Length: 74
Image (cartoon, rainbow, N blue to C red; front, side, top):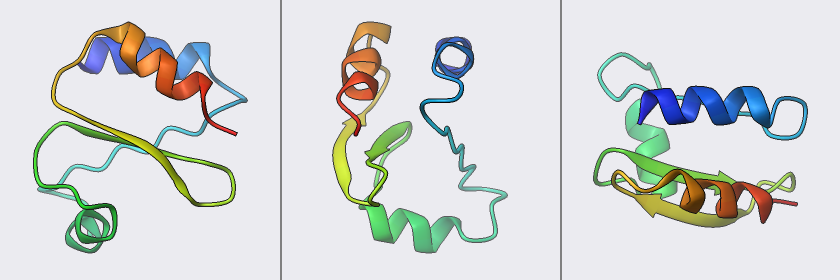
């Protein structure tokens, strides 16, 4: 999924902020996983500019599914 996310991050630059959290190394990983209900990897959480969760995608999914979720963000 990394190459897909890298490509989307470049494409959506200036419109969407991408945050990548490594559960093994990120200091706040446990708190973030609990906050966003992450139980499996990868999990993509799409958060609107007001901080509300728009959607969530779990697992390796097609690029188009990620695009649909990115495009729906406000």
